[in-house]
Image 1: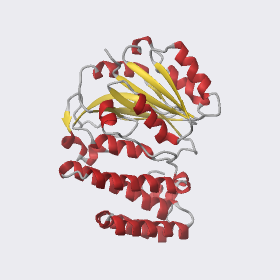
Image 2 (image 1 turned 45 degrees about the horizontal axis):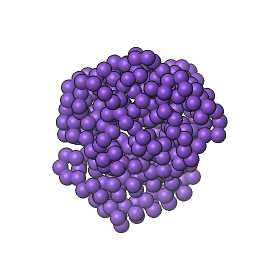
Image 3 (image 1 turned 120 degrees about the horizontal axis):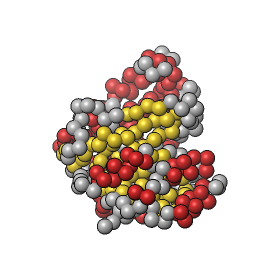
Length: 331
């Protein structure tokens, strides 16, 4: 019997964290059903050396893929290309898994055949050590197969589908030639959108797997890194606009994809008009992007116009990301 799950572990200079992550997969009970693809994305530190240690310890689980640096998307692409497990997921090289729950998860995978599986994650703050579980809400049906329409068209459920909680059938990704943008950040969202759009069925497990390290000022989702890497976000946003048009989905699937694309457009406006402390430069970015939408995707411009003006008002009121967090009760 083949592997049930392939986990791609994108790694770039993560020697400080990698051993903890790989140790969480190193369990005799996982040998038959799990493969861990350590994708070394051109690291210059001891990442490759540490990875080789685990390949030598347990070649039944670990495989090392060395490649030139191409960014997170490139590493995920390499993982998809090399995966042999029935299901595929991504866990970054500075994160780890709940080993006992992963054992249970694999037992559950043996019994199902849904296109995607959604579980739970826990955030772990790297400085304070405080943790926060993101449980599946009580109103979400667990341990039973659901249709795409039952879950992905509901925003209160769809928001729990993230790269940290998502496993997808590998054959769907391979057969549909899913490939992420390379040399850019923010491809996690691209993966979620493209992968989930392919699925017909899903199942939720109230099982905590991913242990996600947070609190690093260098993380791509910090407000100032969003500003610094605005061009990266712009590339991913335009790729998803292109993808939506190319796919031509209709009905509930089309509504779902449209909503997902509109959400990343909202973020694009937030980066320019709220996160960017250079107000003039941010306003210019937003105006240029809105012009691009008007000329190429007028329906999206119309449907996100309200968000543009909301962000513009906050912009002129001097609201930045810190003030917005306080207004929203996140500060």
